[in-house]
Image (cartoon, rainbow, N blue to C red):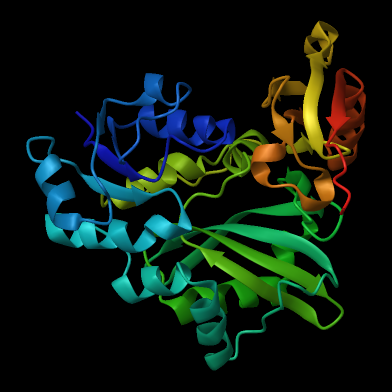
Length: 345
């Protein structure tokens, strides 16, 4: 029987977390640790929920007594140090503690990369195209299994509007990008982990924005799996339990996701998905993520929780995915009552 995997920080975010959680649950019993009950979408994939504060490694270890976990996985940046402390306390595989602490602090990460002369970009600088390398680190080997291209939204929030993955992306053969990824991984001293390396492609070459040693969000694991066949979520679980993941590509396609944001700030009055969306041949899924009556913020200042819906397409090429995304967008209608303006007396 597969060893249970303990997740820290999962089960309360948006529904984009359901796919990776389901993939892990297909291979391992899943124990969720957190002070709050899991969201309804997460419950079918959990073997148990343990009400404990992950920051308290001693009490969390006590709560896990009798469950015999085989590995610990962090689901967010903030949970990286607690995951490493808990893994060390239970004698399980895990990142070096210094690496977890550094990756949990963007300022410390930037300082470390600069000390190691890894080319970095200021997150406030919007020059160049944002991309990310979806990598698996095995001892000294860094395997880039996919590249994610991101279309940002309007400033100043610049939340992602779209992500796309293509099994034959030309950037996979860009030696400068590969060198930047490998230098970042080695500077942080990552080992045996799935890593999401965010970069910006500038006129001076690739510049590293972030290093995230846990499965990425925003349905990127779904896109990678649909485009290449490589399952990042199960790879992360395999590494967390001391195993070796199967990274053999079995598909050569393209996949993309688009997110819908409100045009104005106010209260959502109407949100409807035309059932005809299901007839789109390239459609993977189309999901509403807010309800009428919810307060929402316009895209220029939105948070991830302000997204109204998302839809995923798969096709042979990125151009075909983009056309399908545009077609699917026509099936969504939304209306927001603008927030009342408050005038100073």
